[in-house]
Amino acid sequence: MSPNLGISDQDRAAIIASLQALLADEYVLYTKTRNAHWNVSGPHFDHLHKFFEDQYDALAESVDEVAERIKQLGGHATGTLAEYLKLTRLEEAPGKVFSADEYVSGLLKDHESLVRQLRKDIDTIGSKHKDTGTSDFLTGLMESHEKHAWMLRASLD
Image (cartoon, rainbow, N blue to C red; front, side, top):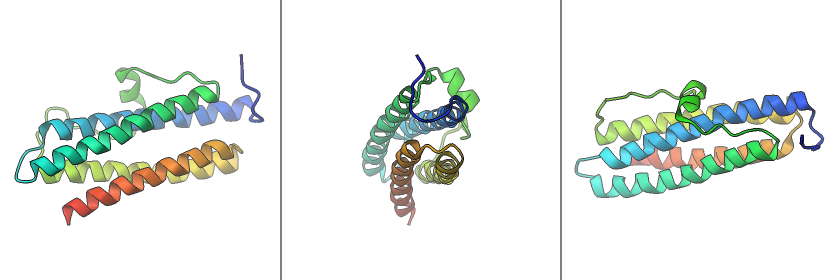
């Protein structure tokens, strides 16, 4: 049954497509953060190991929230790695071993990329598709990524 939320089917489909790409980005970033947690080494290991754990815990919650938002709008949340890899806008480096600073820098780059994408999506979804609920949801998510980016940036100073 299609939801009757005051958003046209065409607009809902466009919003869901944006959210599907975001879900893929969130999941890939979650995985990259887990990888950093597992493989970081060096003099700041203890701090970074715990720091990355806090970040991937928050990302796991974001993944769930984005998937639930897709369901609230009547969509089907993607849930396979193959789909995520097709939809993500983030880059991976399979098999590459990173230094602690490279993990931090790479995750910072991804969080900032998501912030920039979310700013675009917030505007498009709010203005073009008239969905202030999803726009508000994305604003909160953007603020979370801004905080993660700030913390990562501060770790490099």
